[in-house]
Amino acid sequence: MRKVSVIGTGMIKFGKYPDVSLADLGWPAVKQAIADAGIEARDIDALFCGTGLGGPMPGQRIFGRLGIAGLPIINVENACSSGSSALSLGYTAIASGRYDVVMVMGVEKLTKFNGGTIPLEKEDWEVSNGLVMPALYAMRARRYMHDFGLTKEQLASVVVKSRRHAALNPDAQLRKETTAEEVLASRMIADPFTLFQCCPTGDGAAAIVLCASDLARKYSDRPVNVAASHVASGVFEGGFRDMTSPEITVRCANDTYEEAGIGPDDIDVAEVHDAFTSAELMYYEAFGFCKRGEAAQFLQSGATSLGGRIPVNPSGGLLSKGHPVAATGAAQVVEVVRQLQGRCGGRQVQNAKVGLTHATGGGISGFDHGVCAVHIFTV
Image (cartoon, rainbow, N blue to C red; front, side, top):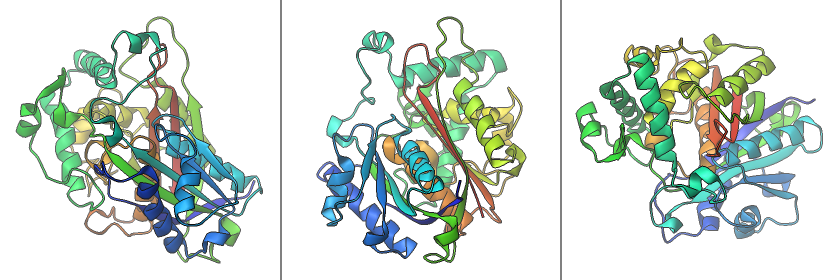
C-alpha cells in the first residue's frame, strides 16, 4: 500500500445560499483546492464526491461547471459521513496504486428544504413515529446528566467555546460570541437543548486533493500525511444500549489509533461531530481525551480550548461553523490540514503535528449511528 498525502484544500464559507445551485456551491471549492495543490485540472485522475441530499450525479454537475469531464466520478451517499467516506475511498484508490492524484469533496444544499430538521427515511419505524435528531440526542443528553451530574450550564459552556473559536474563522456560519446565559435563554428545541445548542443547517462545500506521497513534493511544498483512514458501520442492538457512550465512535477510534500506531495523547488538534452540545462532551471520552464522566470538567479546565492541551473544534465545529451534512466531514479535513500547515491565523493551534477528524451519520432504529468515519493526519 502506498502512502497518501493531502496537497490541496478548498472550501466556501458555510451559510444559507437559497438562490445558488448545488453545482455553483461546489465549483469554487474545487477551483480553490486545485490552485492550492499547484496542479492542473488534467492532473486529477478521479473524483469522489460526497452528498447526502444533493440529488443524482453531483460530481458531474460540479465538474461540468469547470469543463472537467471524461474522468471517473464516483458519488458517495453515507449520511453526515458522506464527505469523509468519500475521502476514505479516495485514500484507498491511491494507496492501492490505481490512481496518483484524486479530488475528494463534500457538498450539500439544505436551504432547499426551507428549514426544519434534516429529513430522515420514513421506512424506519422510529422516524415514522416522529423521532428526529434533536430528540434522539436530547435523550442521550438527559441520560448522561442523570448518570454523571452534568448541568445545563455546563452544556451551555460548549457553545461558548464553540462561538469563541468560530469568531476567528471567516468560513464559519455563526461568528458572534455568546454567553452561557444567552445560550440558555434561546428558545427550547428538545429539552435540555435550546436553539444555540443545536447545529445550524445550511449550505456548503469543501474539497481536498489527495496525492501519492512519493509524488506529493512534485506539486506541494507542504503536504500533510494521511496516517489512518477508517470507516465503521453501526452494530444493531435490539435491547438496552448505554446511551452515554457512543459505541460506534469508541470502536472506530480504537481501530484508527491502531492503524496509525498512535494514541489519544498524541493528538494535537481534533475536529469532532458536535451536532449537539452533549455530543462533543461524549466524544472527549470516546476518543480517550479524558475519563468517563469527566468531560464537563475537562472542558471547563480549558484543555479543549485554543491554548489548551488538545483544542477541539478550533473551526467552531458543527455548532458554529454549521452542518451542511456531507460537506462537514470534508470541511473538518480542510481545517485540520490547514492547522498542521500553520495556516489558521488567530485560531492556529501552536506546534500542531497530529490532527484527527471525526464524522458520524445516520439515525437508524437499533443502531448507535449508521456510520462513523475517523481520519488521522500528520506532518
